[in-house]
Length: 362
Ligand code: NAD
Ligand code: TYD
Image 1 (cartoon, protein in one colour):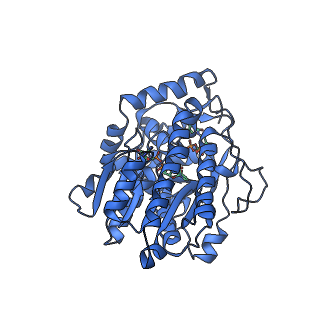
Image 2 (cartoon, rainbow, N blue to C red):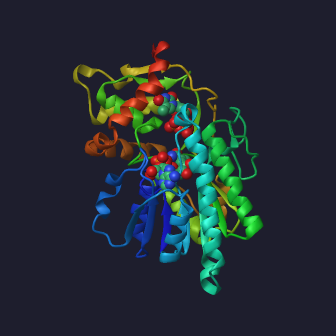
Image 3 (cartoon, rainbow, N blue to C red):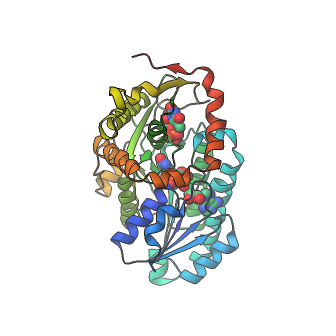
């Protein structure tokens, strides 16, 4: 038995689905079901007795303690977080509450539970903390990619709160001996991602005939990893990672945002052509930049590749094609998650940016 937090979110749900199709071992899925958590993503598990879903908050120490005592998991895989940078700019408090206080409460409960274990159960227990490359800050265009030794220089409320949680996890290992592992991963994409993040947002808005809002000059670089590859990396770290260590995970797929959007438009033109030869590229608009927008992220994943023999199985081209096809095949899922609250968010985030609204110059 393992305990997963945030398993109704994008990466967590992909991890839960992968886990239950690759393992006999059951899991408890603790998720608060914020706007980002969707049980529709787990609908295929409705009759699966190995999936125990609990709606609750990781900051509820008593709840977490009772789950640990009842189910005696051999590991905690901690995904639950507030995860969207733009939302952290508009409302940082929820990020501090869940990412810092929530992680603190989870660590406390894990530490108390770990103290009750002995022998084999104590030796095998793991707390795996899922984090981001954004804790390292922004890279200059020619700087080497982030290694695990890169200094922490978070720039957004989101990345600052994740950096704080990484430090707490480290401290609970050094001070209390909790057997922890930390992973810092680059930008994920793939099925089940909420359409507020770049790739699903562009697919969704493209299909709706809406503007495709590119922040600033569109030259910011992200290093993209297909979510299924992130899940295999986490499983590998869980089974073989060295306690107390961190592992950077990335796809070696650095792309400028505008190139990502162009590639998405080209895939949509091919897979869902518009009438009269029009292109989805016509919908691209440059809008006001994100405040404090990090210019470039890139992950050096040498460590996990050499020590744990992990490498991604998708390229950006194969992963993106699969992703676009998934969104085309799952319009009901998208309709389900883009409720009234979603529309309020897009109004808040995009209305103020509209003043720039330059049409792309070809
Ligand atoms: P997400 O926003 O899609 O999902 C987060 C999930 O956590 C949701 O199901 C939500 O309901 C749940 N949650 C939020 N607050 C909670 C709380 N207080 N208690 C219990 N559950 C709560 O996020 P994601 O993109 O799946 O990211 C998962 C993890 O991976 C996060 O820790 C994130 O920082 C990290 N990460 C994400 C990316 C990425 O590109 N998405 C990259 C690297 C690391
Ligand atoms: P995002 O998916 O929010 O991930 P992160 O900020 O965590 O990297 O954004 C990815 C990149 O895309 C980032 O440089 C901001 C940019 N972006 C846009 O240009 N337009 C958008 O509407 C969004 C949501 C993001």
